[in-house]
Length: 465
Image 1: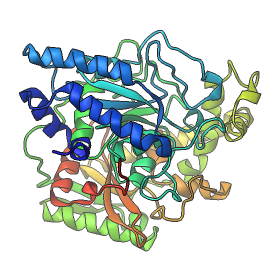
Image 2: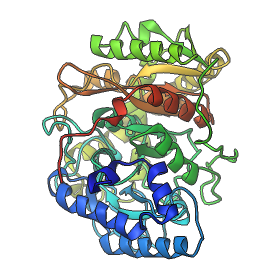
Image 3: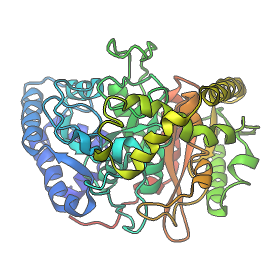
């Protein structure tokens, strides 16, 4: 394998080579560090590269493997984490200039679990300020490697760019209104936004805690599932984390035979751009060819929650930042500052109305899942081809922009985002499966089955180290 092929190999193949001794963790880590050194000065995916620490981790992993001790599929695997996950003694900024010198005194639970699994932490990945929509003026914006004139997504854009370009095997991202799904859609990646509470957010900078999800971003459904396997599960430090046992997300042959997939044609096909509709229709046919049953359904309304997302999120975010905002408002970027100023203006009655909408939507969704196993939806209503690196989305267009993402942050349902086609100019077009709560296994199985039949996920961006 060439160095580039190693950087794009899946976790199963790399793990086989590491476990057999054919490849050493130190060699593999150095290959990734060399790629980061070559590509990241122009792509800006990393906020902090941990070269020395990563090589130390790799040496420990190598010594354990040589002694016959294996921690599992991620042992010796080079990964990256979004820079809102605390790392002990390592700068953690959350994309915020105000946190430029913050050194946590403990690791986030998800980071602890990656380390316990033997993963090698290559570095901290760039994100938009405070996990909102744009980067702080002091920080560079991650560049879409497929087309530098196109948006890379928000807020997990660094995680997406690093993963798409082989600067890590997989990464952690977070999603409050679409921040795993949108970057995955724009960068031809697979991402899992798990059930709210499935993955601990202890030691993670919050945006809107009742909608924040920590999840996985990778190039395949199997890889995303392998990382989720490690980070999921109950955490006594996070009282909101779920107690449900963690499934074996990647095992055996993935079969969707007999699986019922709900499709609301009026919502997912007739109300989106023709290129997106074509992808959704193609996915439905592919899944039917694999033995699934595609059922016509009527979705609960997405519009009211999408319309209320900005206000609801800003109110929660204002509470998250109340220790430093508005007292240190000058250190915030203009977009996040304006967003936080909006929060206190949201009335209690408006929050109560949105909470009622939230509970109604979640209840109607749960009832729908008594009839089907998954729902098939787009991620964006358009292909994203026209979105500039910092998209100018007018306020009245925001609800349409997050129509297929934010409602599932309100409800807490898990989703998997998958590449499903290309637009007229080559832009990736993604779709998502949505599952009942705690049914991530169902998502991984469906994603693996789809990717065994298709090859959209195998495309690589035109970058060379």
